[in-house]
Image 1 (cartoon, rainbow, N blue to C red):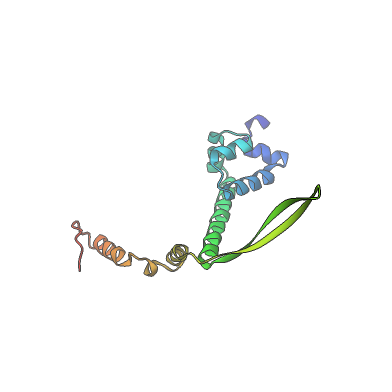
Image 2 (cartoon, one colour):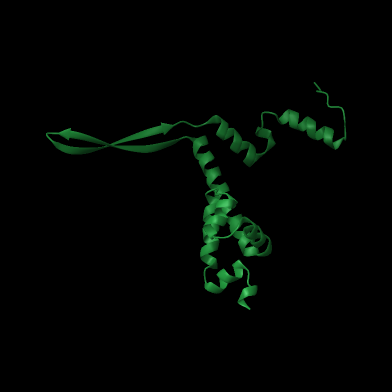
Length: 155
């Protein structure tokens, strides 16, 4: 009977399923390729894809990982858009009288707001009205709705 179990069901029976699903979430959140995820799980890519299509929990683990990755990227873009301070530390080793002295130097570096990151977030979060090409987009949408084949610029 156990020979008819697929890998997912074997992991479930062995009590390894939750651990494997968490591993998948984490790897997807780190933008690891499907090939490397399959390798880490000890299965082939073909088996990985079959399991993704057959078992909803497996597909959900990928989806959760993608959501985590997306949220992390949006947070990073937000941080860059708003500007931020970052403390950097460096350990200097000096030779004083034959003895090594370690000195920890901390500097607070400021990264100013990035306009392109701010524009991107405005467009993504608040729509087309913040896009530089909003007029062109409006014209394209109007032509598509009117099913026009000729695309001439209107002034």
